[in-house]
Image (cartoon, rainbow, N blue to C red; front, side):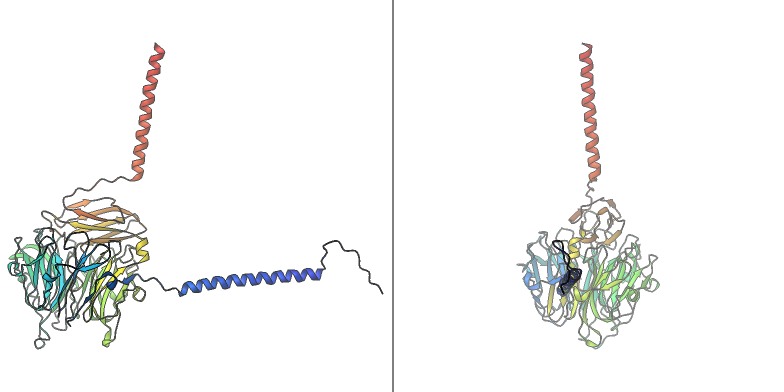
Length: 572
């Protein structure tokens, strides 16, 4: 029987075939979506597998800074200073059983041993800390080296050599020296010197007190006087490091000392500077009433305004939990280490505040010799979160040195706007960590070096610079020379700005002189000398407005003259 099939128009497709086609298209679409998802996931996975670019890179060998260490003295010496005044920071490192070495910065990211290195090698000495300072205000940084035995002061002969002037200067203290710090406590324009001494152990039976520290007054004629008695005799607590710091914002430098309770548990010391009098100068021990008399196995010290509240805080290391003394602004301190996330129990030594990523908040670095119970441990880098807390970013930082670190000092040695580190491992040698932070490169920054003259010491120690950015945030830093442990950091003040610009720069010089330098250009290093007048800087908008107004005035004058000429011609 024939089945009737009507005539179908051209291109006709049965309904079932249409359904099949749409099903195939749907399947294809699903496959394409799945492929796209898999492709995206593959990219994401691959990106996740890429190693994170560390913020620091060990460039010791690449830079020519190969500085081994042979002795077992725990305090390493690492001091930054431009000894030849060529604009590049050089570095001096010590060895307790070998020559100390002076490295010259070649200005291209590399270092070579200076021709003057042999003159400051001190082959026969057991050297610890070291620091550069221009004690005679001649414009050339001199070098002071701590030893177990007489310390040595080298006078810089205008970059052409170093001359041992220890005996003439009278600063050859023969105790077990750890760290030295410089500051003009009486504001006479010359840097005075504090020498922190530990103890005679283990050469002697375990002592009941530490070697006495020394406070030297700079007489301004190349000599110093021992004025340690001004501190009331409380200087035998086995000190590791002291620093001159204006903790109470009264315009003169006080002294904070970190002691080691392992030898003599008298606690840390804070001497408030109360000015002239008292057989020369008045210092008052306010350690207990200020809450700064912590009794710990203290070894390293960092001072800075980490919380940006306008006063200087203290962080010090320990064989145990670390301490963060937050300055309350009323002459007292509170330990906020646990709340801030920087307590980190271990056996730690040198430490410092610096803004490694240029975000405008001071971060914290800690040199760790070992973990508790002798376990190995890495150095720690804490990123400041800007809310009073810190985040431990050590493992991804690239600066998590696994050695037995005791010393650390900072400087922007390659002048790229990011602050670098040199780390001292007492049983192996020194490491140079170049800051290669991508965030630090993207963010804006400002560097300011103050140069004193007349009534202000040449290094401008004690001077303060406050930077206000375009977001209204204020950062205050004080020029200090001597902190961490056995270290000499750069004297240049470095400010991270994030994505902001400089709104105002205020300078408070050690003699009380204040200057408003306005909007210094960001992403540059500026050298400002005492007595130099601030340069007037105009906003671009103001300049454009002036140009427009001048142009309009010229047009009006021309039209006025032209109109007057037409009027005269008409009258004729």
